[in-house]
Image 1 (tube, rainbow, N blue to C red):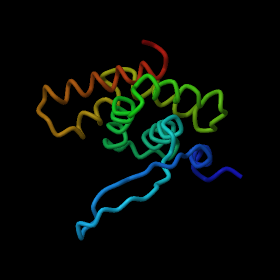
Image 2 (image 1 turned 180 degrees about the vertical axis):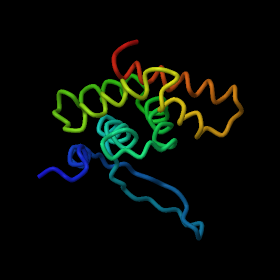
Image 3 (image 1 turned 180 degrees about the horizontal axis):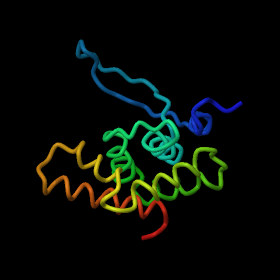
Length: 145
């Protein structure tokens, strides 16, 4: 049975465990394992959260698409490949994610780049750079660059 939010079951099924280490509020070293969504399903969910049928068009979601790809620990190329693999994996939310990239992330005057730039705390020059980076990531995810 598919969850009410398309793509969530895929994200849960492909999650991985990550070991996190740090100090708690009392300064004691702690280690725990945390389940995290794999990068492909995560990007599909983020794009749906931004512009899907119930998308909230949040500036943070738009900026998260940029950071998820550019900051992925295995590299941006791996993030892009994992996103594209979601189509072949049959992720039910992938078609909407792809449509959102086309309608909201592939041109500088679209909503995704504008909202991501709005979220970024820098000056006008920094925000314009973010806007262009979001477009570049959107086009690469679509296979256009």
